[in-house]
Image 1 (cartoon, rainbow, N blue to C red):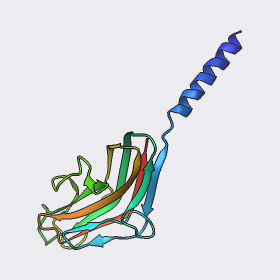
Image 2: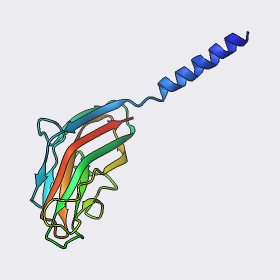
Image 3: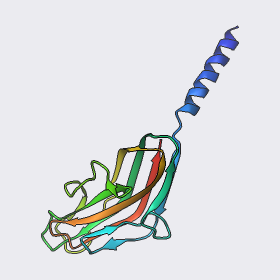
Image 4: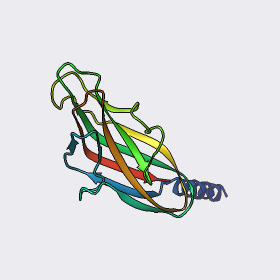
Length: 159
């Protein structure tokens, strides 16, 4: 009898563990170097260099998106206030809190040229309808930045 209760508990816990697994909707990597010197630039999201990825949602709801990349800012010597920010775009619309320029992804450290590389990431909830959607990431130079470095990119969208 005791064995049956233990087996039932083990089976129930096993079922819960399976139910808790995240379903990946789309993921991608860009394992190469990418830099830009224009005011804004779309960031590559695939090893092919594609800057846009399309995915299908079959059930409306809130999903989780994580974006990670190596980042550095080129700015004049002594400028430690310049930064690069990223807007994560779903169907061409920036998703909060990445809207606008006040959310630095990485900042300059006062050294001329690319320096002080970091590997930041952001994880955000994204509300999606049942439909096809497009994901893009736009980099932007701010407050004296002359170039941005967004490389070794990875992202994943899951339930």
